[in-house]
Length: 626
Ligand code: DMJ
Image (tube, rainbow, N blue to C red; front, side, top):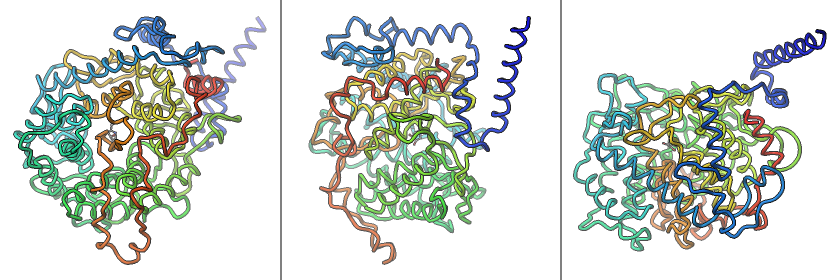
């Protein structure tokens, strides 16, 4: 039949066009790639089980049954918000959030943490991590020193216990916090033949020890009685000991940028790599700065600050962007990709957070310049998130020297960025990027490690229980008020049974097939569970006005303390460098977590979608959800 040939010809044409666009790929630039969005290829057919699971999640989000999740429909209305009207999106996502549901979800998040923590203590401690499927502990891979995925993080120092300390405090569990601190003091030693990544040891171990020390010594004891009998600053001494063992990484480097790895007993290994990622080398300032200021010893902050300055001086003169991998001896960029995810994420985060914590104006200036370059070269899509025409804004990976698109994927680490945007008050833009990641989450029930926005499919399929989306959700919630879509996402997260194993929560090996890997990373307890819990625990001391806190990149809580605002390092830089540094007075700083420095959305928007439903629908289309 003629019409059939016509349809087939059209179909063939469309496929050919897609193939052409796909092949042309990055070189065409983002705007040409709007085409596939307008004619999205049919999403790959999911296996029936995955489709059913997704439907169930969707039903749960709308008030249907979802295991542990309280029945939303029956609770709606008791929270006091106007019944949602309007189109499907508004009906689904607007309205008030009932207090009873909030409490149930808070308790579910607490149980989630307890399940992971208790099983770690029962089956894995004193080893570093829990293998939640086999119910066993895991330490460094001594048989294969090149197994960096494991050895960079696991140092034979009870990593998970250390990383979880302040989550116990934030959840108000003083007896377990006190027990855990004593265990750390009595059993952990850093005098071990482990070669670890300086960055991982800093953010997970050093940061947690400092955070717990600050909580223990806080005269106000906001989380309940977290004091330790006869405490003699042991955690601070341990942090000092660890940092001294990391210092060799900063020696014998021509640029001042540290080596990526160090052996805790022997220093930098003789065969050490001269290349490091920017985030790894340039996100040490918060922890090293806190340590220096608590000890009154400028060494640690000085080396960390020198590394940041060295990296900053290597940015492109044309774009102001940095690459993702640099040679520490030559200063040559081995990785020219500039993006917001792996390799660069916490570099940007710590420019701003160092300023928030220490008040050094140069940190803010660097951050502001970096943010401008990010907006100029990485951001694609329409100008305003909630207005106008064009693709939704996303942040892409470009060449640092010319700003040209390098690939068409974004990674799950980048999902932290809306949270950072909240801290600087760019809430409207944060809403759009968050919505994009949320849509990916809805499609897979998790965030694939890399998602290809052009192919509308994951490029890298695993999900190791990362916190970034929950973190941004939590920070956005602080300024958006009651907004159900975020909590829906979290409800689904709390109930993601796919991750639950016999003895804890497992990494998803494949976000579509839902197969698992036998690993529970320590950041699941230090970050993911903490942010989930805080999202629903409105009475938490962290949220009380008067208490000012900031989260490190590993989610460790540190109070904005006067003790941290006296710089010790100024005398160690040149006069020229000094001249540029103008210290802000403490009262000029606004809290990172309060909404005071944020462009809080008006009250009338509290129960509405923060993103117009047309734009939400557009994003759902863009990720192949509808
Ligand atoms: C955490 O260890 C930190 O947040 C780090 O900055 C990058 N992301 C991991 C968890 O995904």
